[in-house]
Image (cartoon, rainbow, N blue to C red):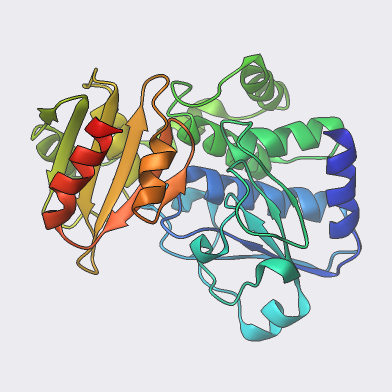
Length: 304
């Protein structure tokens, strides 16, 4: 990987302005990795005049990573900067819709979909934050406390606290490195905590568990904000033991966000792709426009 890291870093070094682009329905991996990336670039490439993050809809418990509210960069900054897509390989999942794949580079851990100007990607790491930590180690890059916290948030949240995806010894090596560099780990965990209202919504939602065939599922017809989607899914997984788990949550534009997970060999990304989504083998997502499609989704999972 070192050669790829060096190529990526050399591209960054050629620009004076850089915009880091997060994805829609942002989670801790895209947010944490982007925040860390910004700090790392500013600390290690003196020729870069300005680095900004372009995105929106940041979950409440991740706002501690920002000095200001996350929003889209202005047109002047966008036009003159190198665009770096963080934590997605699909351009239509980028929050900033001005991004063009072939005019941008990416840093990601999802299966390759769109062709970028240059990219590091592929479904080989449990979190983009782990991959970025590996680059920091390989290239001996400087970090600060904000970068360390961003990387930790990325890894902790995208692995569901080290319980999901392709976790290896390298994952723990990355966390060990962050701690050895002075990461304030307890502070990160404290900031990631949910408030009482968020916990109440999660409890009320996951208590509606149903099982059909190999699928445990819940449906919320009450609008669920992006603030608690990932923690809600993680709490639901903690009480299920079927091969597949499915979470269907109503969103503000009257569609339903579906998060699908599997325990072992069942490839849920294939199900997600059938309904216009995608993701990893054991963790994927898609949207449906009506609960009328729920039966179709359940049948597809059980008959796959």
